[in-house]
Image (cartoon, rainbow, N blue to C red; front, side):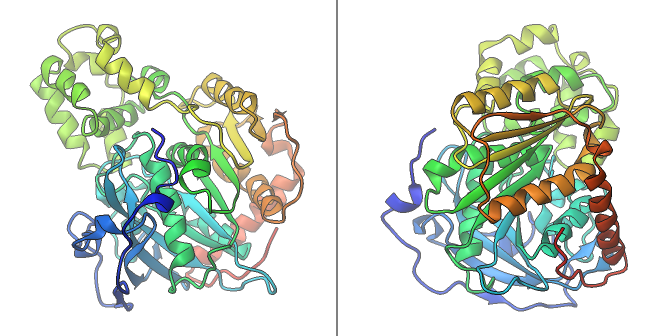
Length: 445
C-alpha cells in the first residue's frame, strides 16, 4: 500500500484548538474501550494525519501501583487505518526531568509489546496509576522507558495497534507510530519542536510495529527527521511463527494474532467460520478479552488443529490464508533510516532464520543495517541485556555519528561484553528509583 505523503496531500485541515484536560489525581482510569477521551470528535476525518484532537495530563505508575514523578501528556490524534481510512490513536508523551542545554530535545518513540486485542493492554491505559492491567506486558517495560528519559530524551509511547487492538496488522502500526510522533512534535503541551530528531525502538511485538514504521517513514512521513530505528526481535514472518509456536506453551500468541486478523480480512474470517468448531470460535472470542499473559496461560500447549474440521496444513495452504500471511510479512519496503536489528540465536519464540532473511533483504535494498545476532541469550533475557548497547547506538544516531553503509553482523554475546554490566548496573539504579517512586534524573550512559 503506497499512500505517499498523506499528510502533504490531504486537502482539508483541522480547524480549532484541541481541548485539554488538566491532571485529576482523584480520577480512576477507564478502559480505552469505555473512555470518552478515545472517541474522535465530529469531523476528525478532515484533519491532517498527526493532528492533535484532544489532550490530557495523566499520572503514571509502575504496575499501576507505584506513582512516578514525571510529566505525562496523552494525545488523541488523527491517523490512518490499515485500509487507508481515517482513524485515531493515542500516544503517551513523557518528558525528561532534565534536558541537555543548547539543542532541541530528541524524541524517542518506544513501542511496547502490546501483543493483545483487549484495550486493557494498551500502554495509554496499562501505564496509568490505578490501571488494572495484570498480564499486560507494557507494564514491565517501564524501566526501559525511564532509561531513555535518563538520556535526556522525550519518549512517546503509542497505542500502535489502534483502538481496535489489531495485533499483526500490516501498515497500520507504522501509521500510528509516525502520526504519534507528528502529534508529539506539534503539540504545544509537550514542549518539543517540529524539527527535533526522532528515533524508534521496540522489541518483539513492539519490534514488529517499529519495523513497519521504519519501512513506511520515507513515503508516509518524509518531513520527520528519523535518525534511526531499533528492531528488537521483530518477528519477520508471522506464518513461520504461527507454525513454530502452535502447540507450545506460547500457542496463545499466534492465536491472538489470528483473532485480530479476522477483523481485517473478511476472507480469513470466512475460513474461520466455515472450518473451525464452535468451541474454537468461542475460544477466539474469549482470547479477544484477555491480557497477553492470560491468553498464553489459557492456550498453553494447545494445538489449534483440535478445533478444525480438516488438517491444519490444509487450512494454512488455502489461498485466502496464504494471501493474509503474504500481506502481513515485513520486507516489502526498505527502511530509509539506519536500523539496528537485535535477535537471539536461541530464541524460542522467533526463528533467527526469519530475522536473518529480513536483515539480508534490508541490506540488499541499500539500508544501513547493523545486526546484533546474539549467540547466548534467549528472547526475554536479550531485551534488558541489549538495552545498554541499544541506548548507545541511539545516542550515536542522535549525535549524527557516521555509520557503516553495509550490513554489519555481530555474534559476540551481549552477556560477555563488559559494557553490558555497566549499563545493566545503571538500569538497576533506574529500576530501584522506579520501584520506590523517585524521580529519574538525566544520567546518560
